[in-house]
Image (cartoon, rainbow, N blue to C red; front, side, top):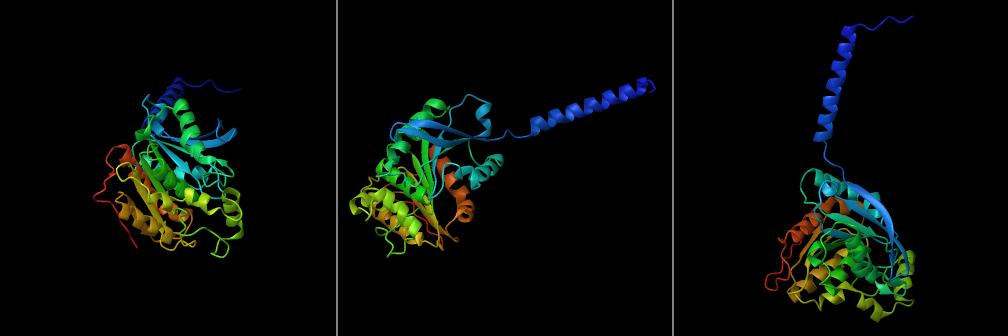
Length: 312
């Protein structure tokens, strides 16, 4: 038979429980709200099918009724919308947010397959980004509608697309940022070093042999020569100086063309190869640049003093 608990023990237990409750409440109050990456799909009229996307919500999204700007993130070849979380970019953004080094904004990554996010033989993927996705996000999430609440971001193939869209459609986004953008100084071919898998991806979008006119119509280097400095969005791009695909040369070329055109931009070469180790080493630079553009502090459209920085 168990002894009857004493009144002293009961009082002690209640005191311990009260202390634990206070500590738990204090921990909950002290802990920062967590960001959240959600996965969903929507119907794209341009493609005539459902398309997957991921949305990275800032910690404060659930706690207030404010509207937030959006960064539309475009992935590289052989990736999908899951790249934002799978490759560590969501975690890196989370660390910047927790350190209060960035204001709140959403990131939306969409699945573009190996389309180069271009309107081509594979479908109207540029329209997916500039029309369908924006319309869905602005009708589904609590975001700032219109150009001043939108930026486009990309890595490799996605960087190529982000820069092209920004130069071709300056009315859509207020800023564009790219890491290791796939900028090629000539139409790709096996003879120029393109690998078998890359050539298959190029051919699926631009034809086999590659249609030079179609390629030029989607080439950021070609669009740079037509950009109106007064209308251009805020532009940031960088590349690894040891990029194994030689993309530093194309990025330098874009810098030269924009400078000649008088288009304000920020460009840099940093030590590193092609890949996410490099991207994660410089991600804070592009995200801060984008945040400044949202805040109206980034220079854009300044034809007289283009902002150009190259670091070796």
